[in-house]
Every structure is written in structure tokens, then in C-alpha cells.
Length: 243
Image (cartoon, rainbow, N blue to C red):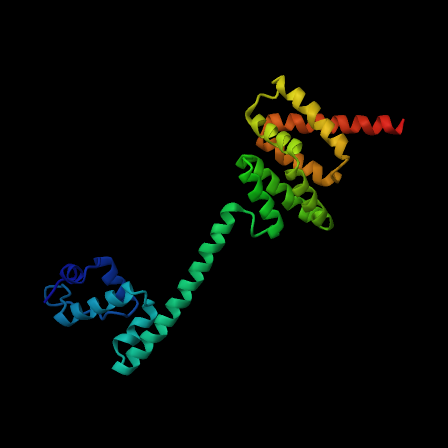
């Protein structure tokens, strides 16, 4: 005869687990003996080991009781069903892992392959991850606010990456990410970027540009100074053109 502690140790489980099995009706609880203790027979140890083995194999507790009392053919059929269910769950977990891997980059789930290819190309060209993440977020905003312009912007972006001067300015901005906003080097960079904007004569929609600017300000004070200066110069050019 075994105490509950001895029974639990025999099966390699905790006393709390044994009591839980009692509560859910999975393992019968013996009556107390004359001394007030519950004593377990060897059969209880065998049953508890079988319960633990099935539970460790992933069998839900709600199905273990039926398996314990099943005939051999029923037991084999039940195990086949359980194996099929486990395979389905494994396939589902593999799919979840693939989705999590995509979420880690935050690109493939929300952007078309052509844009993902642009981001990959930027990394290959040596542009830092902080700048690539901002580029990714800009594409996400553009797709949400102005989806019709997406094909045109994809063509333009690839053309920009093909242009040595444009790439030089991108890399220069990338290096400026940690500069102090008062760094005198920024003024020359702003002059070069303003000249590039004039040469390419391209303006973003106000809503898109405002959101992108906000996102940039969160990433780098130096980049925010660049954005503010370029926006101010664009406004001044528009006023001069209207006068």
C-alpha cells in the first residue's frame, strides 16, 4: 500500500497533480483507512503511470479516461486520430513560425514583392537598417493613402537607385543619422538635397509627407532638421512662383 506521496514519486508526478486527477475523475481516490490516511494499491500506480505517459505524449486529459478503458482496436484507432491531430497542429505551428519570421521584417506581409525587392536592394547597396525601416514605413503609408501611385513610385525608386548621384545622397543622409541637428555639415547636405528636389521636380501628397515627416522625426533629430528645411524651401519656392 502506498501513501499519496509515494504514489506520486512512483509515477514521477507531483502530489498536486495526483489530487488534480482525483478532482477531474481521471484517477479514483481511495477511501481513508482506519488511521485516517488514504492508501493506494499497486494498480493505482500502474494507472497513474499510464495517465502520465499519455499526457506527456500530448493526449488531452479529457480523452485519457476513454483510452485507459478502450479495447485494443479502439485504442489503436484513437491513437491514429490523435496522431493525425498532432500532425495538423505541427503544420499549423510551422505556418505560424513562417508568419512570425515575416513579421520580424515587417515587410512581406504588408508590401508587394516589388517593394520588398527595393528594400532588399537598399540593404545590398549599404544603406543602414534605420533608413531602410523608414523607407518601409513610407511605402506602407503610401500604399494606404495613395495606392494608385504605387506602380509609378516603384519605377521612380528603382531609377533613383540606379543613379549614382541619388545613391550618393542617400548614403550621405544615412551617415547623418546620429549627427547633432546643429552640425554645420547638415546645411551643405540640405543644399544638395534641395537641388536634387528641384532637378527631379517631385512632390509628395501633403498627407503622406506629413506622416512620413512625423515618422522621420521619431528616428533622428538630424533627419528631422533636413525634412523641415526642405519643406520650408519648397514652400518658399511655391510662394516665389506664385508672386
